[in-house]
Image 1 (cartoon, rainbow, N blue to C red):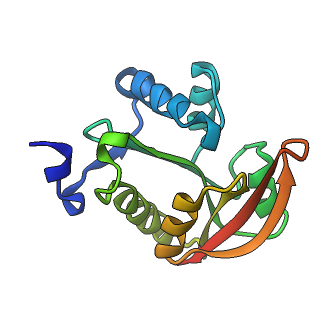
Image 2: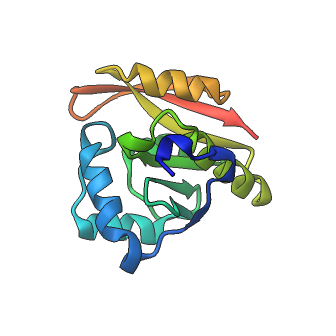
Length: 169
């Protein structure tokens, strides 16, 4: 069965397993580093160890890493949410292998995160999307999931502008 024949509604996600997943998750992160940020394998392991949610697809085609307001994380974008909201889940990064893009895998991962966060009584999911340089595909995708812009910031020593988005649960 090709990835195009995969039904995203039957996609299976599981917790990140360093022995099984580190190599491919790191490679997928690095392939998307211009949008996500590049990380060494050690930085990726530290990031995942601090996260409340780190799930991967069983077919090794996608991952999503998210934090809750109480997690120890030092990201400027995470801090933007922490300084403004008492309770939330923050999506730090999501990546889908190009062979599986457009097949609903990212949407299914987000649905899994929505369920996880609802069970933990989080009022919303927050994230940021690059607005300068723009990432129109990501912005359109997040809007299709019901995310709305709640703020923006210039980051990376003025090299990048992000839009902060939220979706109520």
